[in-house]
Length: 400
Image 1 (cartoon, rainbow, N blue to C red):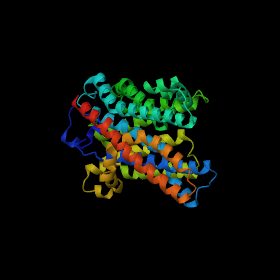
Image 2: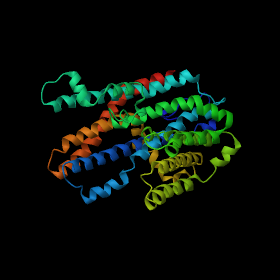
Image 3: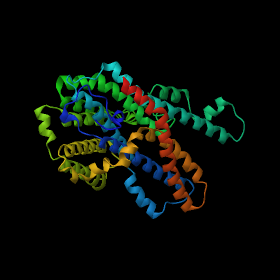
Image 4: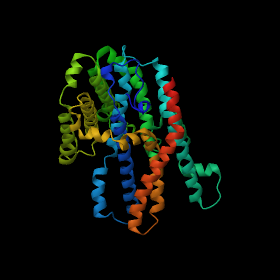
């Protein structure tokens, strides 16, 4: 991908044909808008929680504002689809269909991309929880007492250190809520490199995607709670494979994928939007059923990516793709540059801003102050986190 933020979205390809050198900056824009949506969704959710916790009811206008912002998990699904698409891009563009530099080089690049900012967010989260414990104690306490009051058990700390906090429900949200998906994506990297890619090379795209969807969603359908491990969100593996499929369809030279590539993906996308959010979520009231909604969200996101790439290939017609123009806007692409840091850090800020602001009895001040401070502080802190813990390591990753 030939954008200034290439390292944020793809693993470098070994070789690329001229036809494949399509500018995919919209991927950064899609990631940026998804991160902003998660931030706004969590901010509005915390405003409502702050009101209810003090016995106040949200205003009618606020409840109407909240309605389209209740789908934060769908944005996380978009992140996973994007991850599958971007990691598969250099593989399908390469001559041998393999990871550039082999497995060790792949994991080195992934580690430099994911871990520095993740561990920085973990340290900030732990520090804030311990500080809260000191403040709530209203008197001198030892560090071990503060650690105990904060809820940071050895299991929570060690599981986050080794990125296995998604394996136990009491660990997964132990430091900061948004960190739950980082462990899942980290595990998917291993499944991608060790299982999905060899399966794709040996049997093709269909068995690869089917296996990922069945393995990811199977526990929910076959096992009863709590044995179905729903808390670890295994269905994300299916979304990742859908993103992989999107990359293969977009850039494979195989004739059968070229035929699929030429489908009217704009119509497919809008049809998926209607089916997912109007028919299934609204008319059939299946919104809470993630096992039904999540695959539909993955298909919707994948069809959007396919439509955008198709529009880029036919530049004379791409002006009709309004969503593509939005995703390529300077704001969307700019936020996409530090969207990972924004996702990591915003939960910590939003929760604490709400805790401070809910002490005011002036409702307009509470509404406006909480929203403005949450958005402003989250974006500012995320950009600093990006400058210190993302960008330097991205340069190291790209030099490898």
